[in-house]
Image (cartoon, rainbow, N blue to C red; front, side):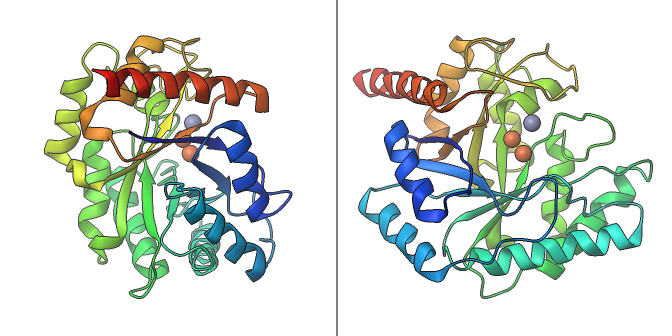
Length: 281
Ligand code: FE
Ligand code: FE
Ligand code: ZN
């Protein structure tokens, strides 16, 4: 089995997200650690955080996958933006300790003309400053579509970052199905080959979460436009095989598809039927 859920708003607090997700039929979820466009983080209400932790346990949820704000660019060209970004990550990771043992997903950033070779050590340096030996959160690097000057659209770039991270037991990867498709990994044509390549370069042991999205664009388009499951260029068949793949069992799968609550509930039900199908094999 896999854990399945979707991205939720934090507007009503932490415990409320668990309750909402359960109503939608899910058993994991994602949320932004602060306004995705940046700005001050809301202070965490300890009682609310403890309430969510109890809820997750009682309802047998999988790990939740927090998402760093989009404005974070730890390898920005301007030193002030870089510093702002790693301070944001450091404070997010401190706040995550209110929800011990979960995941913090971030975009490795855009090199904005500096080149990947310049940017990769900067990203690793940021991680080494922000991550602490006693933290319980696993930091996940998200695979990217390669839009603009984005880092992380190849498994090699992600591996190069991980190689430079000191706290190796606290670093992992999120595979975003839309992003890797857009970056040119043919998960519809040959999923096994893509996962073999991930295993050979990064190691499947590092894969901790999946962002499950269809794509509005074709293989290798470098666009990053998510589509509802089965309505895009990857297609329902390929995404079903991803959900059912033996190497990905036990992971949290997060929907980041353009949907309202009703649409998410429908997608979750469809994915659950795929899981049942697999267990029936
Ligand atoms: Fe993302
Ligand atoms: Fe994503
Ligand atoms: Zn995306």
